[in-house]
Length: 172
Image 1: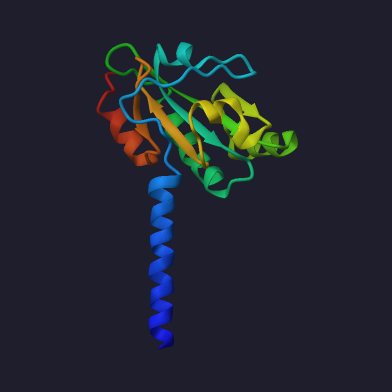
Image 2: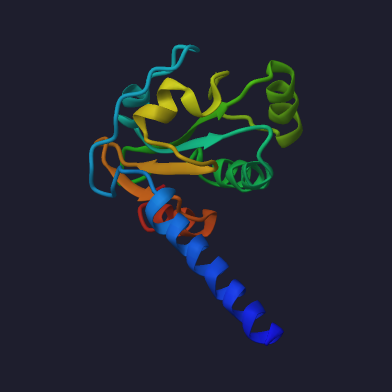
């Protein structure tokens, strides 16, 4: 009897988790949609950045373990593609938006993770940040791949998927 109860609880937990991942977490934004505008307090404007580039827009936090792990992958991706040319005229940039509550933790994470792209934004309102609301971010890490026309071409892609996408478009 205990075996069946344990199996039932395990199946129930998996169903609840699947429901959460499918119905609760996903952003309302979809691939193919125009992305919302984002102007962060540091003065960076998303639309100005994507007019010349493919942009990986990454929402993360210093307090988020999976985000910190993913930062390592983004640093490698950035180094691999930042000087490449795509489709004859576009580049690749990353714009990160840290959803924080501690300036000290944020600065420490940026240094430790070696986040070296220039377009770093931080908002100390965490999930209530204007950018998080505009992009309907419900959990982090959440990221969007945006093309030079402002269209979302990927949501929460892995580093490998982004690399394949970019490699198909490299011209130089």
